[in-house]
Image (cartoon, rainbow, N blue to C red; front, side):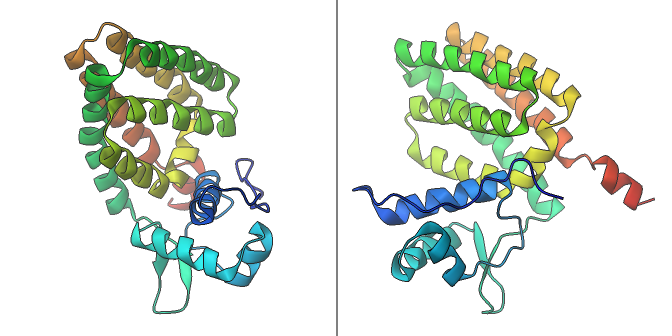
Length: 232
């Protein structure tokens, strides 16, 4: 069945920005949206044609994504999109439960007022995405929301790590965001995070962020109805 979130790989416009980075971003989006599912084998010839790039540029991007753990080389048979086990996913969410509160705390400490207000405005965009129930819009708005927090936190190391961790669990996150109960719960949790940030209350912001990750993990790791029926 076609994935409604899947974002196809399209030819890239060659601009001054490093082409390797543009290829990596395109592949990351394809993984995030499910156009490239875990376990998918990447065929260089096909990717070069879809992205309209040279094999040399593509290989540079693939090597970097492999170094980040996003792609895996299985017995020298070619690169595939990394498959995360349940145990891996549990560990990722445990790391996020520490990392995201830290980033939120640093946002409170370091973000100027204009970035705080911009985050508040974007939280309304995210809320509308949740209320609309469109999974693609929710995922994109959620990514932008955290990108703003990470940028304001002035911690690029944590930013890079968080992007990697969330990308690895993309299938679980996509499954979670379409659940109506999780959508309603997420709105409340995001509002709590933003409210604490507006007050520059580090302790409350950290606690709200930790609660959000904890509840996200519970939802993401909960079997879907199809999985539950298959296991009976």
